[in-house]
Length: 157
Image (cartoon, rainbow, N blue to C red; front, top):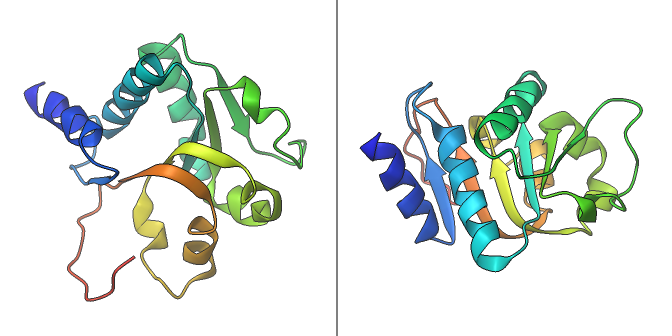
């Protein structure tokens, strides 16, 4: 769809971006297209996708379907490694907001090229622990995705 191509072009021309389309209009695919293009251009990719736990499997399926050449690691569950040693072997690491909050002590020391925050309205309160956790992550480029309308606010993040 033309608006999805416009969305990818928008991502490519900004250092940080918000995609706030209605649900089901392809924000995930736009983010994946952007990451695939970036990997092709730069020869490497290290992205962290943070989303609600219920969406981890959706991201895994979308990656397999739309960018099957990308390697993915799901950082989740009680059996997950409590370090970032294996991250260098993957293009995309997927985790939940809850897990990132629990593991921020070591995640904050890893430098990601890209951070994608899906359903990002969960961090809209700048006074919350979750918000402060997300800003501790190190990255070059941030994309926030939301299908929930963005409200006007006087606070800046």
